[in-house]
Image 1: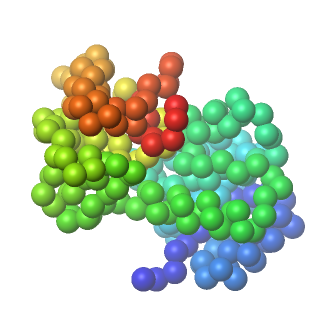
Image 2: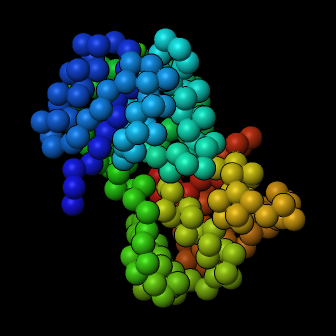
Length: 231
Ligand code: CA
């Protein structure tokens, strides 16, 4: 496998260079951008596998950049880890709801950064045909369309299967109803957002039979998230 390519978006040069140095030493290919405009160009030209985005940037906040990337069909699957000096819980929530895949508060150790990058790359890897996605007790086999909870088969309708498949390949992130509509239903305009709640209920009911319905979490005022961590 070729080296994974990481784009570091940070205006403070010493920090950016230190991060880039650590990543290169760990075997990653690294590109650097000092503002959102440069980041846009680098994303289009170099198609990185992951972005590290500082919250405070000169031309636009890193949060806004992340929001824009996650809205764009071309870039929405590009994993983003937000870097920030802010440690407040509500900033973290804003970062994650803005679409960031993870969040790291400065100062962080190079080891911690590498661990987060590996975790995000692992969990955002698209599930190809024949691949099994697993989260704790639950596993989903894309080739056979079979979902197992431990040793038991979970009976799901086709829509619930697609919903669960999307969730399991995009864990620990909040999706609004309209995002789910777009991603799972392909933006079908005839499906109402209410319909999503119905399918979420059915999915939970099927998972509840196996005691794993708590993986499908409601995030008040935001949408839904799949996570094996407590809500
Ligand atoms: Ca900065």
